[in-house]
Each structure stands twice: as C-alpha cells, then as structure tokens.
Image 1 (cartoon, rainbow, N blue to C red):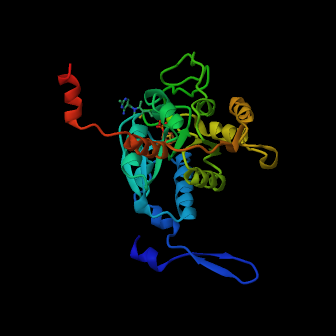
Image 2: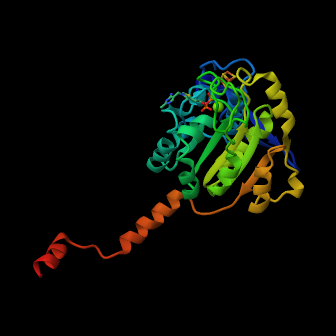
Image 3: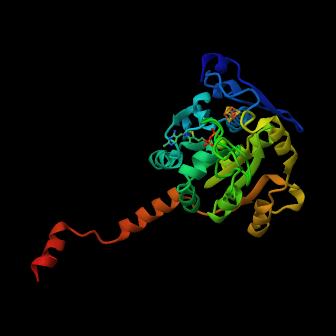
Length: 307
Ligand SMILES: Cc1ncc(C[n+]2csc(CCOP(=O)(O)OP(=O)(O)O)c2C)c(N)n1
Ligand code: SF4
Ligand SMILES: [Mg+2]
C-alpha cells in the first residue's frame, strides 16, 4: 500500500445503539495501478475495471494477496490496470495458468478476466474442467459478442446474421450461450452483470470472490467501436435485474430458464451451490494416499525375484 494511502484510510460507520467505526486499511485508489486504460471512450470494460476496484475495496483484500490472470484481447488488458499481481498471458490460456497459480498458492485470491473470444473460441476447452473441478477462482467474462482487439471479427457469441468484418453477408452460425454452458459445466456460482451498472457488478464480483469454488461472472460489456452506441443502448434495455425475492438461485432448473432467455438478459446471482473445491479434494486425496502402506523398493524387487 502506498504511504499516501496509508495516511488516507477511509472508514465505514455502522449505526446502532452505540456507533462503531470500522477503519478501512485500503481505499479504492490502492487498487489502481496508475496505468491509464487505453480502451475506446465508452467501452464497457471501463465499468468492469471500476467494479473490480470496488469489489476488492469492499473486501479489503491486500493487493499482494490477489492475482489477476488474463488472455489476449481488449478485455484482457485488465491486469495492467489493477495494482494486484497480474499476468497478461497468451490468447485463450488464462484459465490453465490461473489454475497453476491457485495450486501453487492456495491462499491467493485468483481472478481470471477476458473476452468471449479468448474464453469461448480458442480457449473454449478449459472452462468445463475448472468448473467441474470447482477450482476456487473467479472468472469475469466480458462478452461484447465480437473480437474487439483485432478489429471486429465474428466471435462465438455473435448473433446469427450479424455482419462483421469476417461475415460481410451475415453470420451463418448459431451463437454460444455462455450462461447455459456454464450451468452445464457445473459452475458452483453463476452471475450476470451489465458493465453500465457498476454498483450491481461490483457486488456480484464481491460475491463471486467470497464464494468457495469456481465462480463465473458473465458481463454484458458492449464494444462501442465495432458494435456501435446503438448496441450499448439495446443491451442496456435487455439487462434487467432478477426479481430477488421471487427467485431461488439454488434451483438449477429455474437457472436454466433464465440462461435460455436471450430476449431479457437477467442480471444478478443466477445459480449457486456449495460443494468441495479442487484444492479441498486434492488435499483429501493426499491424506487418503498417505494412509496406504508404503512399499519399499526392496519389497517391490523381491516380488519379481521370487518368480
Ligand atoms: C494464438 C493467437 N491467435 C490469435 C490471436 C489474435 N487475437 C488477439 S485477441 C483476439 C480476439 C479477442 O476477442 P475477445 O477475447 O472477445 O476480446 P475483446 O477484444 O473483444 O475484449 C484474437 C483473435 C492471438 N493473439 N493469438
Ligand atoms: S475496440 Fe471495442 S472492446 Fe476494444 S476498447 Fe474499443 S470499444 Fe472496447
Ligand atoms: Mg470480445
């Protein structure tokens, strides 16, 4: 933490019979790297990085105890803008690298950030396995239904008939539905947010980080350059908060109904369940294996010599 930040600690006040003042060690600025984002003006990813700052601040996480791993893409620039550990890796390979970080350093909070192309085209083979293993990390997918960085090619989530630089006659492919896929892959925490609603998104990222296991935050994060401002407005209209009091996020059938609804993109916590994490299972397996009788090399050789 910077000296300036140490001096400028913020505080929360909990009111009650007697007021309790909780001093915060970190302020939002402690999570900013000082590097100025170079995204286009109006890009949804600004909202996402701001939501990450807020979530880390709400949880008062030490920047040195957090690692943000990304692939390649406009959205994958995020690690550069956050003061935590960061690794802007190679296209589509953020998840395997993040898995290694979590195995080597289980106490580190691991966040993966990237785009629809990075995670569901070239990198599409990785998410099913971290999800089913329940590796304890939070994957923030910034879905703009396009390849932004490489100048507007079709992505796996682009709509049918969408005209892009690589589909001048319109896309002939059915788009992938990231939220439905995530449920099928057995994610244990699934939420959707809109980049333009930073308060809600920060809260969802916070809940994802707090969740013990694999959490996926699907973020509708419009690319204003290759999809236009109109697309931003359309997506804003489509994103509607889930009716919290009438929705049970532990009901997987209901979660699939929400996932399959592509007319209204419900935001909020769509699904959550508790089950052991990958690290828990590995440790349990090691303990189990250690109970088994240890064979000396001589015992094994004797088995062959006896024949
Ligand atoms: C192995 C490899 N193939 C292709 C590329 C080119 N490339 C870089 S980013 C990208 C797509 C980015 O799209 P997305 O992940 O959706 O991120 P966005 O820019 O939209 O945020 C591609 C195809 C690359 N860098 N490496
Ligand atoms: S090209 Fe699109 S995704 Fe990339 S920075 Fe610009 S608006 Fe954002
Ligand atoms: Mg994209």
